[in-house]
Length: 270
Image (cartoon, rainbow, N blue to C red; front, side, top):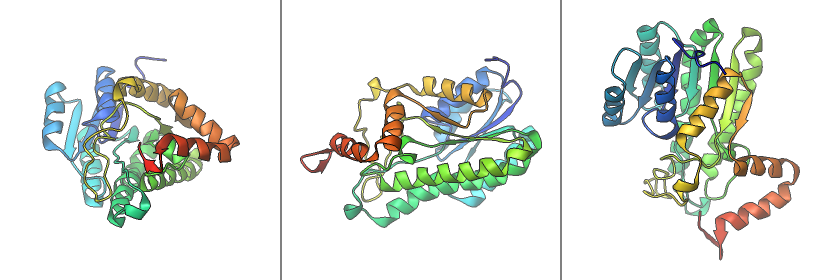
């Protein structure tokens, strides 16, 4: 693939101060892109600016669940760079709790950030992306293909993203815009550490051994390669691909395997 593909392209990445988002920011700036990103933590955005000084990075504190924050971020990006070529809807949050134990506000918050954030930024950037015949990307999840126990709200938000982007892909075919959704599978990122518990508080630790997962940097590289190829979907990791395959062709067996993986002695363990 061309190492010059992203040079001077304006790429918007939501949630770019951590994990896959930050890895995308780092890689794109190295490839000569003009990058705009947002996040809720001013200190992390400041650190990102210090890491990439100059005029090729635009940052703004924004909560993507807030429409006005999204509008200010997208409008300021267009004013700063003159347009948008690629939008990567990356900002997201997870949760871990059984529905019977869950405060319903947890699911509302997850939907607001994951789905509404994608909806708001996509709609606000749409005219600029149509003008550039660019690309819209949604960072989804294996949970968008296969509902996962203890992640009912997270799964719902990712199923919603997949359906939304699939519909939008058809709407924009004649406009020359590519729409793609990515399912990273189990990759090393901060999303599990800040996943919400049953009361809506960050659980503070990951239930998985992050050292054995695909790195955020490798994940970002594969996403950028797929954007260049104008792919429709991208499912990452062997576990992720196997899960999608099993769920499609052997759904009842997939139910049993998922239950075995997530539960032990009737207790949710992962």
